[in-house]
Amino acid sequence: SPGPGYREPGLDALLARALAGGRLRVQSAPAPAAFHLIAVPTPLAEGRRADLSAVEAAADAIAPVLRPGDTVILESTVPVGTTERLAMRLAAARPDLAFPLRGGGSPPACVHLAHVPERVLPGRALHELVHNDRVVGGLGAGCAAQAAQLYRAFVRGALMPVDCRMAELVKLAENAFRDVNIAFANELAALSARFGVDARAAIALANRHPRVDILSPGVGVGGHCVAVDPWFLAQDAQDAAPLIRAARAVNDAVPWRVAAQIRAACARFAAPRLTCLGLAYKPDVEDVRESPAMAIVRTLLAEGLPVVICDPFVSEVPEGAVRRDAAEAITAADVVAVLVPHTAFRTLDPLLFAGKVVVDPSGLVRQAARQADTPLFV
Ligand SMILES: NC(=O)c1ccc[n+]([C@@H]2O[C@H](COP(=O)([O-])OP(=O)(O)OC[C@H]3O[C@@H](n4cnc5c(N)ncnc54)[C@H](O)[C@@H]3O)[C@@H](O)[C@H]2O)c1
Image 1 (cartoon, helix red, strand yellow):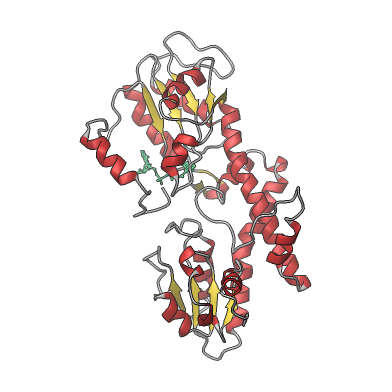
Image 2 (cartoon, rainbow, N blue to C red; image 1 turned 90 degrees about the horizontal axis):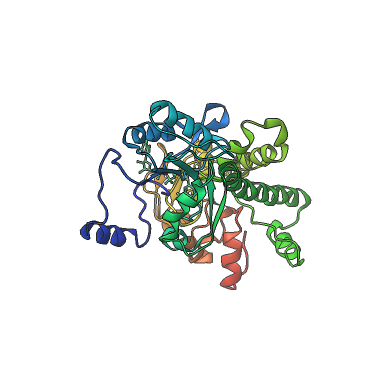
């Protein structure tokens, strides 16, 4: 989920129907079943390695109820090799059961294991759960086919049977691809600023090339996927991942650069009144996990700058900051920093920004002014 209190559109009604119809039972301990799905968090631990403690706890909880022929499916995003280690953990807990070997045969009546990584976008989860293609990574012969039986019941996209290591790598590759490409956009923004060129206009023009598709620069990369998963790919092969590590460093440095811009803007005033628009890790969600906007606000607060925050999705702000309505907070500010381009901010009257010093890495104010045909004052 994208964070505490988040409500996936359509999920409440679907859940209520399933519960009322007796098709869904909720309990605190695993029960015997033909399929066991593990979809627990896999955050980053010390040393930029995956924290697999929730996966291990889930495996330990499932082990006692496993029966011959059952299928265990890992949906969490994990480092390559985790499905094999999961099988070894289950085998150690249940020496009475048979388990498959990767690339080898599956003994008769063995427990099947598969990695079927999740790809849904929060906010569109119910649609994408059905329509996205899925890689189904089996551990031993027959495991992928066994797991695919479950997904065939509700997936209309293609199911692609592969080996579990392939599935683990593919999922990590998808998120590392995003990270590397966002890093390029962010680096281009820094270079453009150095050369006095408007980065967004430059990117829009470059993207007119039929084989160029540069992403948008911003205040950095957050959330519990794109900012985290590239490390899962690099953690056991640091020497083979220079580009992925560099992209992480580039994206991690952006909040500090934006904080420096805001600090410089505030230095023009004796007692600067600063308003920051947005705290979430991306537009239109309330999730603040690994949020670059949050890192920027915390840095500014630690340096003693008073910060007013506007975010229609996030109700809790860091200690020392004040939360206010956007229009009111912009009007009262000397400096306005647009940290997250929430859709709600796009409809703000561009005239509100007149006379303000605006730090706007995502180009929201510039775009709004253009759309409203208001001359630009920033
Ligand atoms: N949310 C997404 O859209 C999405 C997309 C792609 C991949 N993923 C991956 O899926 C995994 C789960 O992500 P999420 O966003 O659903 O996580 P989440 O933070 O919403 O947690 C999922 C559930 O796991 C439960 N949980 C936590 N620890 C547990 C434990 N030890 N035993 C049993 N249950 C436990 C939580 O109570 C929660 O209900 C992660 O690896 C994530 O990277 C998520």
